[in-house]
Image 1 (tube, one colour):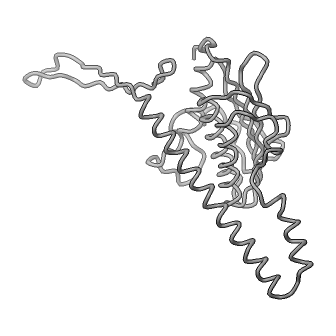
Image 2: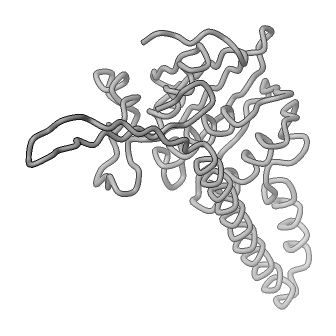
Image 3: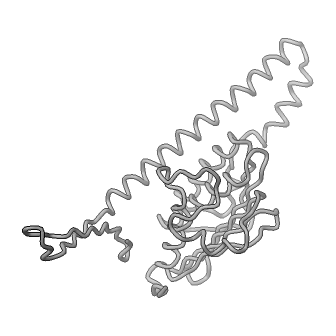
Length: 250
């Protein structure tokens, strides 16, 4: 359970004497530091995936260039270099636009690398602008991008938008061209344990990402919703109120 900015684990145990229940013991343990450590570990794993994706891609490019040089097709080699000069890189400084928050920018770079490895085109809407995000934005955007890349699949497309609003709140929107989510399920997918993915394994944390996103949004006085994307798949929109905004009672 979330209590302001603390993650608490609540556990209730029945106390019995001679087989007769006499009381219930409620224990609350602060898991904030553990959750933070797990988030940092996940960030390191994402960075590792990013580096692996880059190494694999650059290796393929070098093999192509080597072949063209050995075939003495220098003009084709030059055209190949020109062609991959822009598309072969991850999101660069210009592509990141006005997203200046270092943690969010690093997340976008890493997720783009992983998406490219899975043959998914991940782009950032040019209207994106963010000076300061924080852990909540990283968690929300990371979960939404993971879901969108999964939904888009090989050859798919994902477009992300993140903006800082005038009141200090954050607006996040992620579109994909996957199969989408039936209208009847669009509210349920924000509940813990609910997923539309096939062969979902609860042990792998399926049905947790969107529930966490919705919980963070409520804690920040905002909301999370889903609709149909202009790309044909799902569009998820999340609004986070400014830090210190009143919690929405739901």
